[in-house]
Amino acid sequence: MFTCPLSADVYLRILEQRDAEPLFDLTDRSRQHLRCWLPWLDQVVRLEHTEAFIAAGLRQFADGLGMQAGIWRGGCLVGVAGLHPIDWPNRQGSLGYWLGAEQLGQGLATLASRALLRTAFLDYGLHRMELRAATGNLRSRAVAERLGFTLEGVARDAEWLYDHYVDHAVYALLADDWQDLA
Ligand SMILES: CC(C)(COP(=O)(O)OP(=O)(O)OC[C@H]1O[C@@H](n2cnc3c(N)ncnc32)[C@H](O)[C@@H]1OP(=O)(O)O)[C@@H](O)C(=O)NCCC(=O)NCCS
Image 1 (cartoon, rainbow, N blue to C red):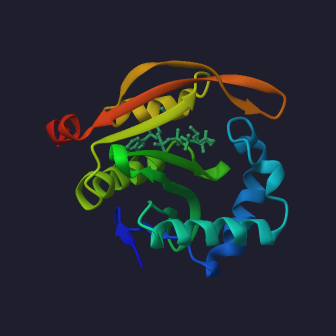
Image 2: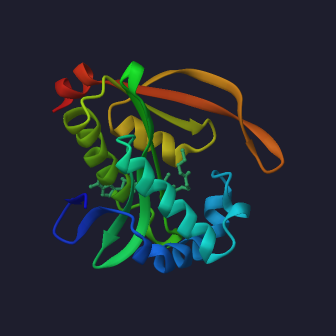
């Protein structure tokens, strides 16, 4: 299975069914901070919902459409980073990530995303990676900017978040630009 060391005690590993309990527990502990920017918290209220997410991620990987990986630190699951389903006709993918509430501010999302960009451009051979964040999600936008993504524009009312729409800041990184950053 896909595993990728990120530092001495941090690694990415594709999520498997044995990770369902720690992933559900992490989600449950982080609900309040995740709810600010992720739309699916009300659909993940029981372990079986996390199991279904993991199963969908494994199907996605088997179908060559990307993956959903856990971020592990010191043997504990601390977040999730993934490549959303790849748009093969256009050789395009997009990144998503979240961290447990206690794991912010240590560079883990940036580190994990950097590794997924290598996977996207080198292993999958993609041409363009997109990263979308609500315009008010300054922490996520900072990750995109730290990774060298270019802000291409704002998609208005692009996502329904429980009781209101948010605009998306649309960032992208092309394979050639990524190689220039290396
Ligand atoms: C988006 C999210 C993952 C960003 O988390 P984050 O901790 O701010 O991002 P990183 O893990 O990359 O850490 C960056 C911080 O660590 C610091 N840092 C320390 N070491 C670092 C390193 N080696 N490399 C990069 N940053 C480092 C940075 O200076 C930055 O600190 P700051 O917050 O004081 O500016 C987090 O806010 C989250 O889970 N949000 C809810 C879900 C969400 O919004 N997902 C994205 C939807 S688009």
